[in-house]
Image (tube, rainbow, N blue to C red; front, side, top):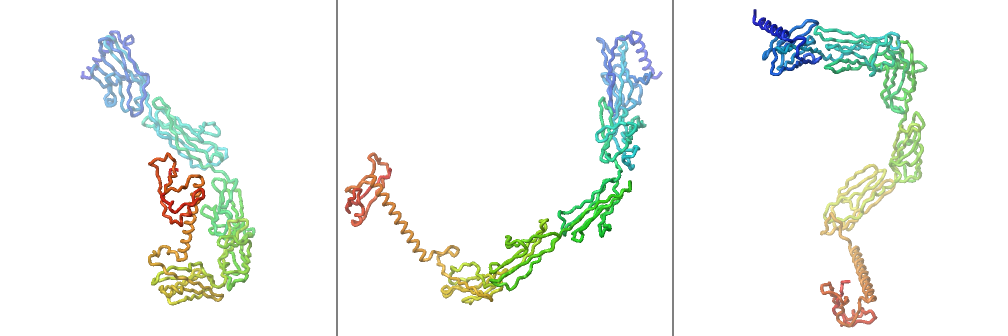
Amino acid sequence: MTGRRLASFALGCLVFASYCSGGGAGSDVDVTTPDVVEAEVGKTAIIKCEFSLPENGNYAYVNWYTMDQSTRTKIIGMLPGKVHHEKTEFKDRLNMTANFSLIIHKVTLQDAKVYVCQVGLGSAGVGENRAELNVFKTPEMPEILETDDRITASDSKTHKIGKCMSRNGFPAPTITWYKDDEPLSPDGKEIEIRPAVTRESSGLISVSSTLSAQVTKEDRDAHFYCQVSYSLMGTNQTFTSKSFKINVHYPSENISFEMEAPSPVKEGDNVTLRCKADGNPEPEYTLFALVDEEEEALPTDISGKEVFFQDIQRDKSGIYGCRALDLQTLKDLVERLELFVNYLDAPIIIPEHPRNLKEGDNLLLTCNATSSKPLEFQWEKKGQVIAKGNLLNLNNVTYHMSGNYTCVATMVEEPRLSGSKQVSVGVHAKPQLAPQKELLFVRKGQKLNLTCSVFSVVKPKFSWKPGNGTIHFSNLNHQHNSTITVMVTEELLDSGMSCTAKNKEGKAERHFRLEQMPEETDPTKRPEPTTQESKGVIIVAVIICILALSILGAVLYFLHKKGKLPCGHSGKQEITRPEAHKDEIVVEVKSDKLPEEAVLLQGANGEKRSAGDQGERYIDLRN
């Protein structure tokens, strides 16, 4: 015999001896294994085997078997300290741990069997127990095959909605169909579901389910999807497919014909006319204009249901229509609308250019405009409304009435539509002097620029006196300027400068007075006041001093009356309280008045004080 056969024979004898010594059915060996062990394909499964050793005893062997119907096959065994593989093809995937657990690596579907753990304890006998290994495989995500068939709504037959598939799972998963989150069940009439199960060569299972149903028009917005349910390691799991919509065909029952444009439509706007039917597929459209009761087809865009007017004009006003022919029912649907293009031509003012208008004349301006609807008019000047209506009557005009007048025409029913026209009115009058300073402070020898400004409709002629200088002219609208550049001389300071502006209606004169600026005065500052101004300042100062002296006299008189200011003949008087302290402030007032002036000072009793009694006086300021 070979070594392996001898070992098997010896092991068999040992088992037989164990049985003969009281093992087997009547054995006292208690072996424990789990009833069910679960594992996922490709992962590792561990099946535990536990038993109790007698006191001071040892195990004789531990064997693992598989059960296939009634056939038992040994796959691995362990003698004390040594593991023995019965089948070499499982050597890389099967093993036993030190605590006798069976380990199966890279689990396959074929590993789903009943496993038996047998323990021999010598004279104690033999015991065994069995465990079932269940193998699972997560199925692939569900796929949806949408139908390409045309589905007509409201017919009596069912239509294929779609097919849901999930591949390579174990055990076989189940598929449930949903419509708008509501589960669907076959009813044998309106809903039909056909499941299918396929076992792959790998032993894994693929499932599919085909949904067919009767379809209504309302199903055009329904969302369909499927859900795959499977069990994994004792828990229930689900996968959900993407949702999809079906293409439901139904006839058109109504059409809409709408206009996309500003309101109200006016010349220059962009306008789109759009026709839309409620059927699927859409019918054939014909857009037309009604001309002399005849339909005149319009060019449309590529969709055939829109017509576009860019920069629309008044001649496009009229009746437009849309005709839709449904190919399912051959029903003809027609809808019409009216397009009205408002217009407002630019106003016209008569006279457009008033000419030769002189002061005292009368002027009547008339404003008119052509429009699609009634207008109202108003006249404005400098943004202010000055008259209502289309007539503006200017009576007894003056130069100050010159300027730009604006006629504003507004459509009464559509205030958004308005137009305006401006007319310039110029009244011929003698030149009008513009406000300017006529007193200028200058220095002898400096170069001086003087500008004479007047307002006049007609360009005036300027002249200067004296005129020995360089002269420049400028004008803006009706304001005319003449600028002369001269050197300041003593003669020019005496005479000043005169400017005369003359036109056909008269003339205007302006005289500029020139005064010498003091040398010490900064020319950027205001000049010193004139002599007359200085005299005025002195008079004001004198008046203020007199008022101050009067107030002081009145105060002294009031104190004297109250007894606060007693008068005596002694050279000194202390007008303080007896308890005055030496550290309090005392002001000494000395008088150097002449005897003639002394008579003005009298006591409280009206006595006059002598000139010699004007000595030192002390005033106590503590009070």
